[in-house]
Image (cartoon, rainbow, N blue to C red; front, top):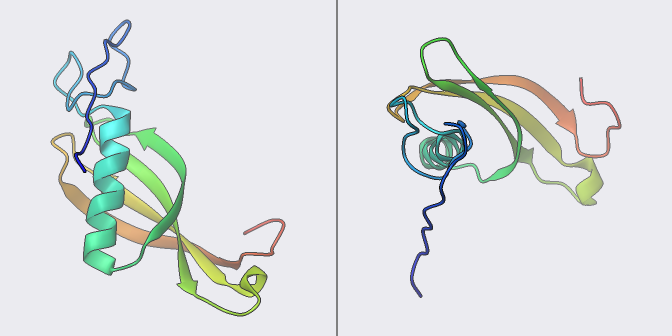
Length: 111
C-alpha cells in the first residue's frame, strides 16, 4: 500500500493549503495539525482521538488542541479524556505541549 499525497492549488495564499508551506514561507494549517498530532503521539505514546481547535500565533507557528483518552473504562462513556495544547513552530518543530483539562467522555460540558 502506498501513501498518497496530493498537491492542491490554494486560493489567495490561504493557510489551509496542503503543501508544506504556503506562499509566505510559514507552515500551512493542515500540515501543522498533521505534525502536531504525529509529534505529540510519538512523544507521549497517546493516540489522539480528535483535533478540537487550531490557532495561528504571531510568530507563524500554530497551537493545536488535541483530545486523547487518558483512562479507558467500561462502559466507554466513563472514559477519562484530556485536551492538550500542542505548539508547533513555523518550521514544523514541536515547541511544547500542555494539558489544559480532563473530563469524562459522557460529560455534556467538558470544563
